Image (cartoon, rainbow, N blue to C red; front, top):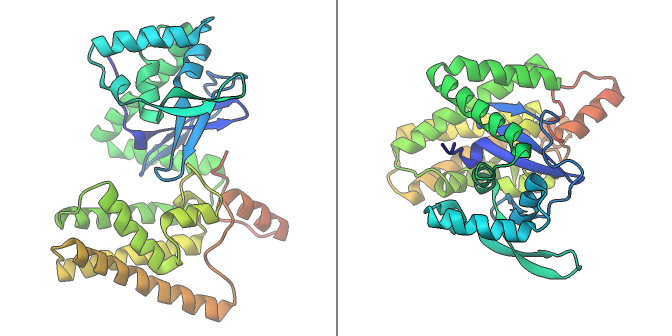
Length: 316
């Protein structure tokens, strides 16, 4: 049986030729780094799509790692034919990208995004893939448990943040920010806003209103790629983001916008109100609130100053 996990539940990061696995959800993040290293010391070609903000991986390289095949290209060709014959949509949806070949030339090769890669790996009968498959099964089981008992997900999230060294104050802010975000998305759902691109557009408007940057610009400003932006925010950044989203929710409840334009106007107003608060705080303190530092860098800076820091390292 194939286990299908959504892309927002699974992410891969590439570091020095080693792919480590990270499980990331909106309401719960668990770091599984160093628990499974399927691709240790073996290079896998990747490409980062700035527009879609996701990684693509060379399927042939993954096949070579998992199977030790002398001809991974031929192995993938046969596997692809079999999966197509079985009606596997994952293979159909895979596409090609030009990547540097062993001869140094740019050649077209099949690639898969994170979700597609997880599905394909489960079709490869390799002993090396077994820890990977077991992990996926465990992950799916945990997800079902959390649906039946949401407190389990909260407990795992708290354990993760504590293990990473976050302060109680920061953890409380982060938990509150999740609650505020959920209230906002519930309101958007009531207004007929579709998940995905429409959520992202309204979020960008809110973020731009209070921080002066879109979500993507904000992540670039902090030097982030797949890492969570909110997990790399300071206390004040989190508070202002919550203010913007909570204000947007309340305005939306009162105005009950019915059109896309009306919802965008509400989002802009919510962001603008929080933005005014940010500028007032900056005027009083003489310090910028929106920080280019990641959590790791901020922690190092605060430690050097001898001050307890509310954030912790969430980057790899």
